Image 1: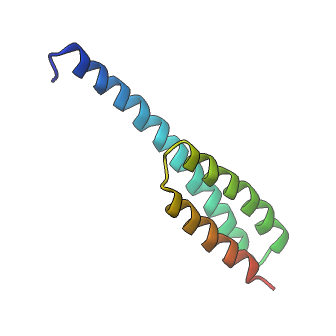
Image 2 (image 1 turned 60 degrees about the vertical axis):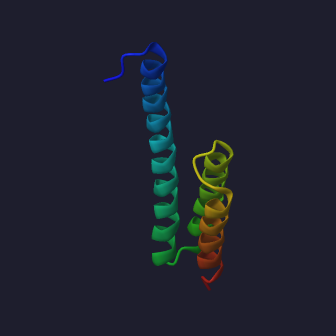
Length: 87
């Protein structure tokens, strides 16, 4: 355990940031799963609606520094490609 006051503060700040990042990542994963579920059910309208919210959540996570820019781009690209492949 840390003895120095600044080290103790860093531990608290790290715990706070970790909890925030975990919540954001969890929300992104949930939105991605909703898009994938709509794709497997072959529901194009639902997939497009879910894609819109998923892109929004991924972009917000990227702007907050949870995801790297390229990681976000890759996730968005793959989801969009999958939705667009629905007939």
